[in-house]
Length: 183
Image (tube, rainbow, N blue to C red; front, side):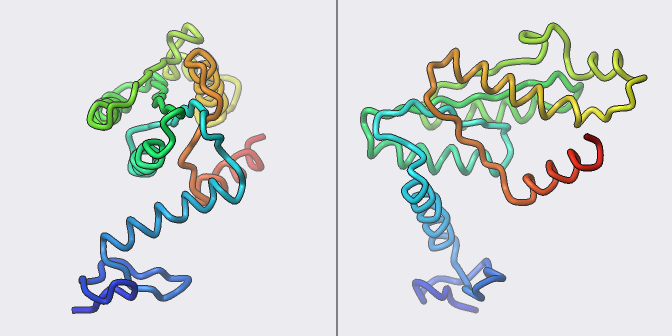
């Protein structure tokens, strides 16, 4: 059994490629939380009394961010969190992730706001794609812009001061390349 590089007691389950550190689950979780805390502090992302809207898709990245911010928020009694999930209206795509997001919000005691493309734009993404097929744009070209706008609208309606997203560097590069290739 390979031991954790930090606690030297528990079995390692993850190896950080850039540092070679071997981490157990507990030390891995703590290291991620510490990285989030350090980034918030370094870049002065939040004030002690902010209302923060967390974009929650129901996937692992956004749910981990929600759990970490929920833990941090408890240390700042004047701050508050809400979670926002955007339902794009893609058939057989979002229902399960909305359920998972709702369950996590309920467990954490966080208000969960679900906003849909249909509510805001009058059309689901599926309907938008059908109507604009002849324009030559991919669904991703519409979805990203419309989802971000929906998130901004919901955050404003929730009186949020900030929006937290769990975008990774892979997400950022993918967006950059899609914009570069498709305009």
